Amino acid sequence: GIDLAVGMELFGQDESGETARVVVKELKGDEVVIDFNHPYAGKDLLFEVELTELRDADENEELTGVVVMPHTCGCGGHTRYEHGDGGCCGGAHHDEYGGGCCSRHH
Image (cartoon, rainbow, N blue to C red; front, side, top):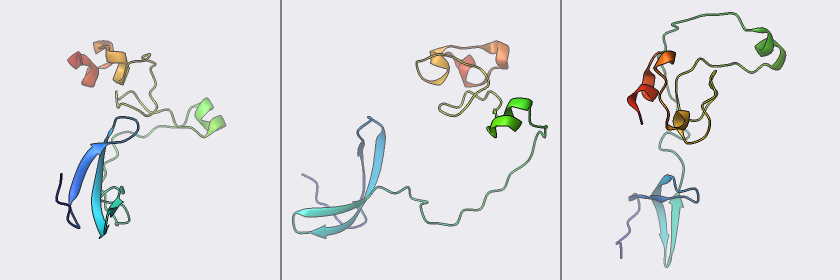
């Protein structure tokens, strides 16, 4: 029921239930060619960063080559603290780690 046009941006869900953004690239009769790439895919990006801390690798990081990131409660990614299942920090809060998103009782 949508009148499609080349360049149109559409949103839906992928197989895992996450929001998926697509762009209509081409219309071929009853077929529609869509692009699932991120809008910045293939573009040069410039970042400005500020180093706020510098430390030596610990023994395990030296051995494995895997850096243990400090706890930021960033959903997905490695954290120094284990929080169990249930999304970011298992839905728990833990002010003893300095607040952050987990202290907001999400």
